[in-house]
Length: 431
Image 1 (cartoon, rainbow, N blue to C red):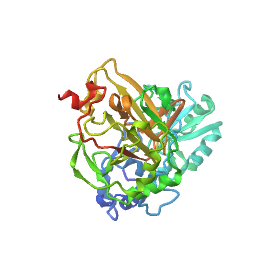
Image 2: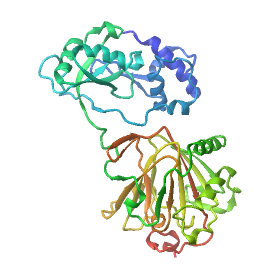
Image 3: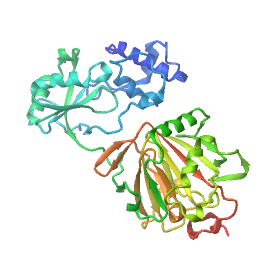
Image 4: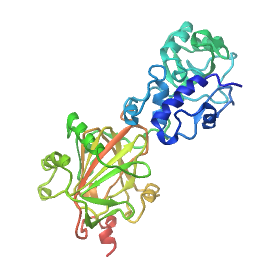
């Protein structure tokens, strides 16, 4: 069997060659590239699975826009910035028991349609126009990230049945002669493995009732946010397993979860000076901390889907107040308090803790907001960012942005900690 979409994938591969230079895809013949695709014929569908390329979000964007703009695309962040944050309606993938033939009564007004979509030059509007001949179409949505499978949602199940009977398994002249493979599908929210619907998410810090936790929205303006992002992007990033970081003042050592006070990196960069001035005017910054001289900054860049394991910032490493500024995108931060000591445990151990008395609360951190952890919130509560691409906030399902950057400002401690929470304190546990 030949490759009917070889010309299309030649364009895709050429575009990917511009984006993923280390893979040396550009200007390579198509035949060796076939090894990069795993063809699944179990239900008679062409499904191309990218097995070697890991930057799926870039590929999805490129595929979805291939019919509109085939010019070389270079900047990954620019590509990602176009991906919508709000989630479109999602559907259950058809099962073996789902009707796939023309017999039987319709059980859904939604159809799962394979072998058409933006990846093969067919817009959702064009697909909707064809299916509208059989009844009112509520919408056409991507069934997954492949770009070659869609959901056509009808106003009633009988229109869906008529379309399935007329179009399934037959070439469609109005859709470039492609043979459509159609099954029924059911509308449903993303699964619990994708949406953080286990812990209710608050929008206001006071709803959590955690002493010492404060959130100030719009701490910086949109213009200031862009200036801060440009400043860090002009500097060197350190690559970790799943995210990138920058350290100023003192380097944070992830192996020991501490800092070496004898190895100072210098003063904090000038671009955070306006933030520091504004922090000291923070409405919940108590008088006892007014003289706190913040001297350590860690900048984290989180790609979509990357979070942070549960942890308490090491007591012996940093003083009381910890500030975290969210830029470029939102996230959910979950707070956990365990009845047992967690300071010795790794972040993985904390996440898998079997402590049945663990209290969990969650807060939505919008872009440009400043979070302050002090007192009990800083010393006794683990903070955690779920590793999700999708979050559920109140009655809304929100897709995280392609990038979130946080500025964490702290004061390095030069003496043992003597806080009121010895069960979580490394200084006091080691005495």
